[in-house]
Length: 249
Length: 391
Image (cartoon, rainbow over all chains, first blue to last red; front, side, top):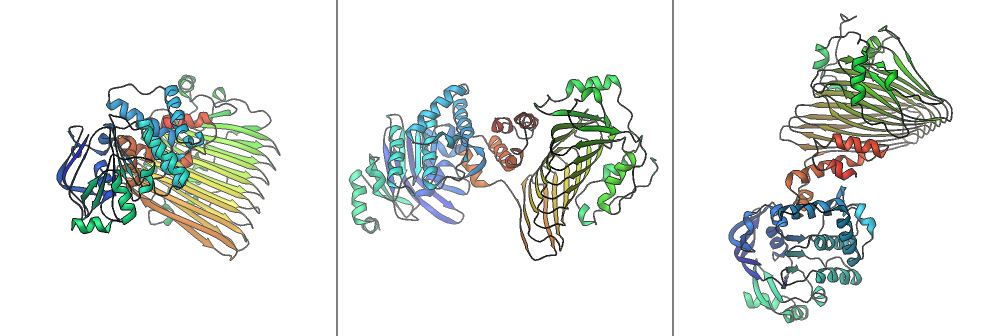
């Protein structure tokens, strides 16, 4: 699904990713953990094509295609979804319009007709139930006035409606209380399937108590310095990052 | 009369700094002829659908056309035909220049009087085929309520037209005026207007205005809080494209205590257009307890576009709450990337954000039918956004 080789990226003059290698097969959930400033969010943003994040070397293959050759909207239309750590508020554009426009953009890319209004509302209502969201959210501006938890639920709602092939979730657990964390995790788990991959960027083990990862990677100093199974996350929770960084040094 | 010398304000006059009056200097000032039957028939076929609950008054080149208008029960709507005669003395000052021109060349005055405690919903459509100087004189008696939609429309999009409107309104004590102004002039139109509004005690005036179309437009509004505790809301959206130049000047005088003014301007300048808004508040010594708030924002969406927003406060008493903010910026890159990351194509994403920028103002337009008509008309400028976003 996703193969990243010798990936280098910088923001302005600051080198952030420095020879990162990562492979995420379809059907798997991978967690990327690491200390602050290690490059986790930069990896997510760069894969999504955010302007200002410059790739200086390396390659990214997504379903056999050169991901880096695609514009941000083309990446999304091809099935890549970025769940933002800080979802942006867009007053004046309501949620339901964004959802429908995004879904239709993906359908158009696949050569399908625009979604029927009734079919769309049925789909959205079903997903909102999963995320335990009130329908009133649909008519509000995108993330406008939402609490931190509501924003994260809204991100996962979008993901459930769009049904991406590759989801990159950037610190989806930050700012969530325990109940909201469970709801968000449940939403993510409903999306797991053999033809889909999910990459969770997180600081903490607690998200992984609810979303069992297949692989856990430690990102430090711009590269993956250690990989392992779910037990690695528990070890990091118990021992912190220093021992991994020392071993990698 | 057409030989009357016209001395136009220059760009050195602060209140006229961004106004483009070049078209006015070239214009011929002649009384507009009464529209012929065939012309009226053609216009009738192209008028927008009637708005439920609203009576309609149609002016063609300033002439009241009874055949296209509907009666409004319980109110007085009359047109005094002045036949081009000068009506009243010229008022001094550059800000009165266009009003004085109107007084010289108007074909009559439509007087709309709403009696005490009565209510009226009225749509006035000003159709321009050449040059016109429509005049509206509105009187709201104590406790009266008027929902007025004023729309401008050029009969031929590619015809050079001049519209110089004068609107005077006296909003009596406890009366309410809701004024929606939609300027959808043709591409070669010069659109000018002067509003003179006076608010009585506890009167309220809420204006929502869309400025678009027209090669050049200038709107001058002179408002006085004459009675205590009057309330004024002024919401304006302006969309400039091509080489259009839109300039609005709003002068509010707080002459009585306890009055409140809220001013909100949202302008978008694309391509080589220029959009300007100058909001001047003057608070007189007697106007203790005045509250004013100005939020003036412009979006620059073209490499050669220009935007100028200027809040001005002139305060002669201490007991005042006044706040103001003015910004000119580009599309928010974070918002844009968020939409792109959801697969929205760049042109649609930009259009959506532009729509979002002015939607607060346009959402305040009365009547869902009017909002739908306006959204449809904006589809060309904001493709894919307006129609769906309003639905």
